[in-house]
Length: 276
Image (cartoon, rainbow, N blue to C red):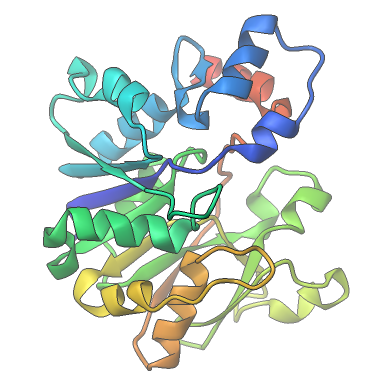
């Protein structure tokens, strides 16, 4: 049972900043253009607050928030936040190597976190995005997974997104015991039906994982750079580990995951959170 969770919050939010939504207030547009997505105010609170609420309900004890080189605004929002006093919230910084203009990707972010908190190299921990609102049920399911390494496998039919957006998600293939065999980034639409599992479902990754630091660290450290995106990516390190015959269990789940990717998502999420 994992008591640690790492939240990836150090991305550049480039898609959010590039996007346009003329129906947003000038205040919301300014937040979207200037803040990390987890700090954008939705229904009166930073978006990351809603994820932390579910993390707390799921029973996690230690939270590691990976930010960019400057964590000042995240610390101001969450370091001494009384709403999360039962959580041990700590911060890791993802530093940009000399000669680069942007971070080196999610695998590099997690590697830098483990280097800054070496206890994680000897323990199990969950990893998730800061711009996805995973449910209490999803977090608790992964926390209590019957394996030291796992990934939530979402039923594509339950994700309430347009088809063109879902087509950008990574599809996963499993064996008959639900051990992960492969992750296919942006599969060809003509081939997607070939990735059904034994329940005739297509399963996609929403970037929420459970890792054993003792097994995963060396694969993070040795993760190659994707030649197209010029980043070190978690799925690459994960698949290299599987290539060394180290297993990752897939856990089927069927529910929507609210997501904050572009300005168009802001109004929809405010409406959703207001109902909650």
